[in-house]
Amino acid sequence: MIKNGLLMPLAAPSDAGEARIAPRGLLATATLSRSGDGIAYEARLLHRAMSDLAGNDARVIELGVGGAQPVALRARVRFFTTLLRLQSLHRANWVVFTHVGIARAQLRVPRSFRRPYAVFINGIEAWSATLDPARRAALHNARVRIAISPHTARRVAIAHPDLPPIDTCLLSLLPDDETPDRVPADVRVDYGPHAIVIVGRMASTERYKGHDQLLLAWPRVVAEVPDATLVMVGRGDDVDRLRTKAAALSLGRSVHFPGFLSDAAVRGVMRHAAAFAMPSRGEGFGLVYLQAMRLGLPCLGSRDDAAGDVIVDGETGLLVPQQEPDAIAGAIARLLTDEPMRKRMGEAGQRRFENTFSYPRFRARLGGILARAFPAPTRER
Image 1 (cartoon, rainbow, N blue to C red):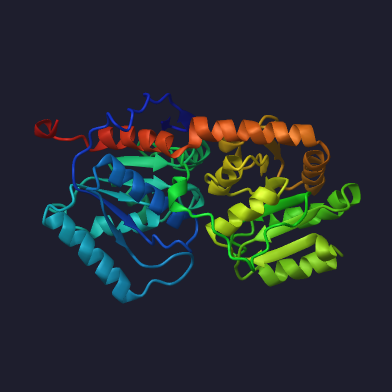
Image 2: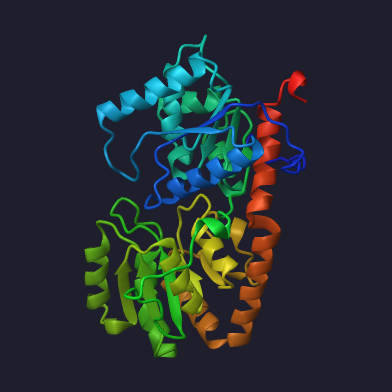
């Protein structure tokens, strides 16, 4: 828990089987789409866990958009109407909002109908020093605020020291049975034995994920490891600029832009890769690190965001200063040229994934927080 910018010890969460939560929970999210961004995946993860914890008693409502798309008035009205109806008719006893922006809708529900709610805090949208009044009110009025990493909780608490305490619930990945392994035959997954992969949206409004820094580092990497390849998976309005930059740096065929890939195809690319790298400065957590760790890939992240809450520097991967391409290049070259170290880090990452970030661990963490915030009435016990 974070209070006044300090990390406070949390009570150990109950096991998922012991957590008793009030029935009729509701998840409110922008989208559950499988083609959505990180928050869409997080929403699917939350819905799965809430359904497990509440015995399939968890409802979900979607605004119906993802990413930076504008929200049509009709969609906003439909979303709010459903939110109001479920609470006013006692079909929802408590609500979980997947991010701060969408939680603003709860403040428009009349107080006589408004049920207690939780809001997940994902990072940059909440730690901005210029948090608008509606978002601030949505955070203040929540029964519980749940940050997805200690880094995120600390940054929000430092930026807004007047906020009530913040709980932390590290995320996980969905169980394997929800992500089939079949990859279309025409999708390339093997980019050579010294491939480094980054997965993330390439958007002009999100130039913090490390794509530019990797490109600037790559000439030195190739100088040390001539067959090294950089695979930039994802889509967005910044792809063409990054392609042009790679050409200007004379990187030729050592850099690849395969575009958006399905979860199964991403796993296929990772299975053939040597390591995963995302030297970002703005991640509130970084689900893609978990994807790589589950498959035994060492990870390279930055010291400037939540990567350190996932990657153990020198044990499961390497952490570097985000704005130092030479440091990034040196770390990548180490990973590519020291196969025993790479193997050792990959295996340690798999163990850390199972011990800390597996789905049962997440469900237990979430169950403990929700049971404290929305306990089952005495008659339900």
